[in-house]
Length: 318
Image (cartoon, rainbow, N blue to C red; front, side):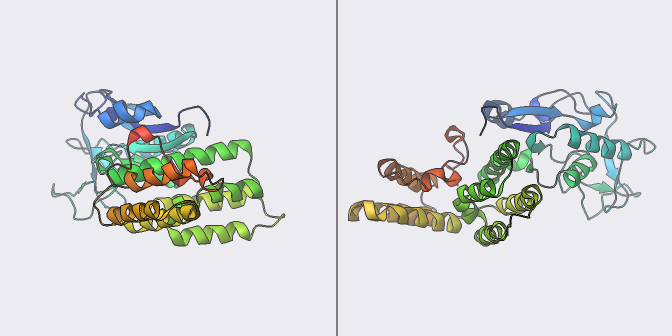
């Protein structure tokens, strides 16, 4: 990984900028106080970017939930649908070096899901939709980790999002150094246990994909397929069961170095974790302690052992 902070785009109101329709903001302390220590935050407000002022007339989604329009809440003749979609195309290209995006929930431009779509009778349809800017941005950048700020209050979703952001940054770094068959296999090897915790089946699928690579295959083309499937696999949240399985695998490497009491202590902590008594950080810290005393070159390359900065404490609540 490079020394530069990975970039995360976020809705500008979450960064504390007074860009909401009412001239206010929705500052997220998680973003500005916690994540900003480790990531470069890039604020974006599509509504301001397309020329709507602050304060401004509110907009909402209307019409067919499958193909909603963004129109003025009080003035339906104000239609900014195409402007929002077009700006998404511009932003998706301009923000080529971001590794994730945090969107403002419930927004007709930025919400990822469950946005009300109002009908001619003034009531919302049963079917919900995505904000127009967010939907188009995701179409253009399907592998990019995205999340709504409100959902990041859930520790499991927060850990999963940051894990994906840093994997995305890791991949960007690899691509900047040049893709080769050897580099792809080494990358996959480092992500073995991370993948096993999220999607064990996909670890095998991706291994076969790389194993079938020949000298004639273009590493860039195969790498794009590999990375897309990797990000899809990591988007599945790991469970206590899959984490427990990985912890057992890791402890297996250390068995030949440990006495009966140490083995029993590790086993008990893994069992306590799987039963929900202690968080993941407890058995993992013990395993890392033994690994420092009995270093294993292969295990020390594993992203799973430290997928994100320790002081984010992301494994203390899962």
